[in-house]
Image (cartoon, rainbow, N blue to C red; front, top):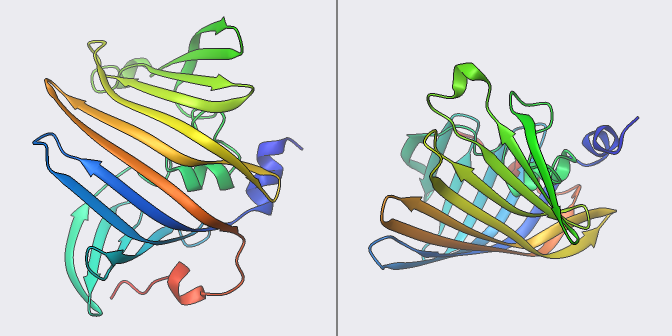
Length: 212
C-alpha cells in the first residue's frame, strides 16, 4: 500500500484558524478571519467567519453558499475548488503533485535545479481548447509552487506553499501565496493556517453544516 493510499484512509478531518489577506486587481484590500472545518466524508469546507462580520460560508463540489444569522444569503456555482484545496490535498496524500497524479493530466517534461524538481503536466487532447499546462515545483519532495497556463501558454495563476509544519506525520504548508492574473490585472491572496487539528472528534455539526 502506498503512502497516498494510507493517508487517504488515515486522515479525514482538517480544522484550522484561518486568515485570508487579499489585494484585488483594483487595489482594494480585504481581510477575512475565522475557522475552517473540512471533512473528506461530507465534502464540505465550512468557514466560520468572525471578521469582518460573522457569517458561515460552505463550499461543496458545486456551490459556494453564504449564511448570516442562520439564513442563506447567497449561492454561487463553483467547481474544482475542493479537489485542489490545500486541506483536501493534505488529507488525501496528494499534495506533492498538486493532485495531478491519477488525473487526466500527464507529465510531459521534468527538470531539476539543485534541490528543486519542476514537472510540466499537460491536459489530454480533448481538454486543450480550454486548459493549458500546469507546472509543479517541489523542494525536498515538498510542494513549493504551481503555475497554471491558459491554452495559449500565458500564465494565469501562481501559487506558492510556504512554512511547512508536521502534524500527525503530515507535512502541511501553513502559508499559501496566490496570484491570479487576468490580462494586465493581477490580484493577490495570502492564506495562513494556524492551530491546525487533524481528525478532530468534536464539532460534528460544523463539519457537516446543514445547507437548508
